[in-house]
Image (cartoon, rainbow, N blue to C red; front, top):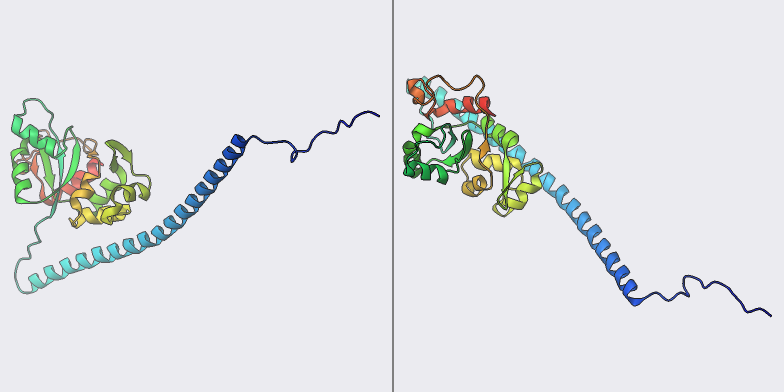
Length: 250
């Protein structure tokens, strides 16, 4: 009688212990990734609700501030007085002149302001020290107060995050949360609000942004570009006219 030649089943085949360990590790890794993805999805959903709520509060705050400004102006007109707006808390500074024939001190100030190239722009908190610095480099820059619309345009259209020394486009709120979440800034609207109101984390917010790279203004610079703005040129303090320049350069 011929011996049995039946083929052993999969259960009867001995599996090497190393292969079993590898399978268990892969399964554990897969389960951990699925759990992490589910947790991240829940976190994003929760954050989305928080972001919408904050954005709504910011809009109410901006509208209330505008209405208060109008009310104060009307009150001043009624009493025959002049209404003087509050001093700006934030300047937007743009470099408009190159590196040739720059003295060491102005050159160092431009480096401190992170204005290393022509048409680079940064937000600066207005203090006595920064105003003195801006005065020293006035022939190389133009600056002034910008409105909320200009700040939004800059952040949304030309905003790049500074991540590990690299220039990363802000394509997702998670990029902002990762960089500035510990300061309570978790989305673009938080970032805009912090800059517009010159909040307590203004320095961290602006340091987390790469200097804005802008284009030449629509129609070009004025013929006498390196005269001051009040003399018909482009350098120096533009005050509230800075917003118009920003719209032309974004």
